[in-house]
Length: 75
Image (cartoon, rainbow, N blue to C red):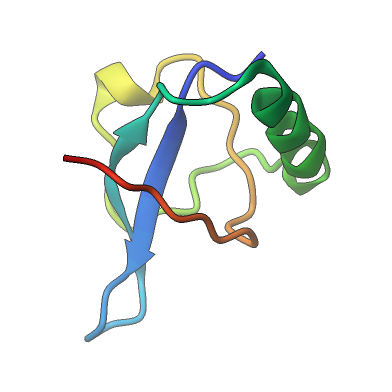
């Protein structure tokens, strides 16, 4: 089961995908199942980010191709 999602955005200057943080709360059980189903076919061996993800955030991560876009609201 997904514990958190690592977030990224494209740098406006270079176009590179850069790490922006992570989100791990606010998901319903069904939303997590849906996300897992959509992400599984996008699996890849290496990080899609141009910059390095902090080691504590990259532990036990499953990398995927950055083909999906989501919206995160935070305060």
